[in-house]
Length: 512
Image (cartoon, rainbow, N blue to C red):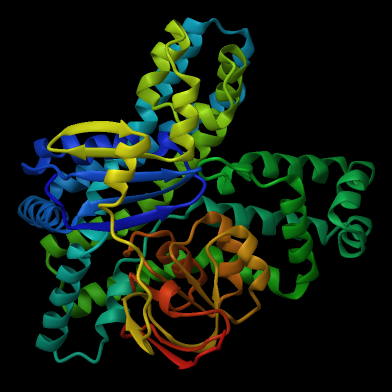
């Protein structure tokens, strides 16, 4: 086999086959209809963890072609963004229907039909996000184009504006994420608790379990509101295999808000007014720089990319959470574990359910170690020696010894602080208020640690990544796409993060 110039696009812990079938299918087989070429894809699974690779040259060429098409016809991609927003809400709506479904009462045929219909919508939602990925993931083509445009216009107008700050502001979305909606609603509940003396005392003095037990006796309405809030948002942390947040999490969140009585009304006002303030500042910049209609469309496109990346992820997390009971029911009928079920490609479920056509031993092997490979539009799922052969084609992580590295500005600002490497929820115990969070790539499970951070630094991602979205909402400096931050930086290192210019300096290294 001709060796390709693979690079690791992403490492994803705690995931499964269902996440990437549609995406790999689009990139490897269907992207040609949009830009005339496909990309080869390599995915390596080991016990629920995945890293996947694309060839550098192919990915670069795909980005250039998609960029050319976008600049020639911005309306093409705007239409795709509109479709993605609509589909994301449809996925969430259908997922909530699944949450109310008794799968045990359905026939095999009804089960298969329901799952196939849902996955068709789910997969369409996921694939629609790939356009932004091809444009922004590695080379940040649209971002660089707009930064160059701003640089020229700022110089032409002899303005004192800074490119990084102007770009960050003009690409800040106008719509709220589900995470922000959840936090606002939690504050509103906390404000109600503060008006009830006995309930307030309960939240201030007792732990979560005691609060949950005692609240119905003190105030049934508030108990119902908290329970409804918990059920409405528990899936936000589910990602691909869970677990979802439990009720204790939300009670502790509200308890913490009640403790900060003097601050939460101002925090709610700030969160509520943020979007209007952003719009006013954006309009001021647009007038000052006299941004033309074409570039206004492209700025809106990038704003939508950022908002829709979060919305699409939320839709998928809600979906994965909502069809877990379906998987459990299928598992009972077929005698398969959740690990085995999650190593059945969604396109294989029909014959598994209706024809009992599956091999439990192969599913076990897929979970332990397997490779998905798509080259020249021909895809295969491999185990054993064949899988080892292709896995060796992927690049090995390298050790780096540097004192300075750079990335891209997501949110400008300058901060000094102690580094903490946070990749998994269990890492969050290390995080103290004001530390600099360094991660391969952030996700919703890491939000509690992100809220403590004075700055965020990631290996991968562009302006549409999770770290960008959250750091903008939190208004903390963020540098993304360093590629090697988690390999260079160690827990305890003293960092100087200059997010205005995307530079991170290690001022003092913590020797291990």
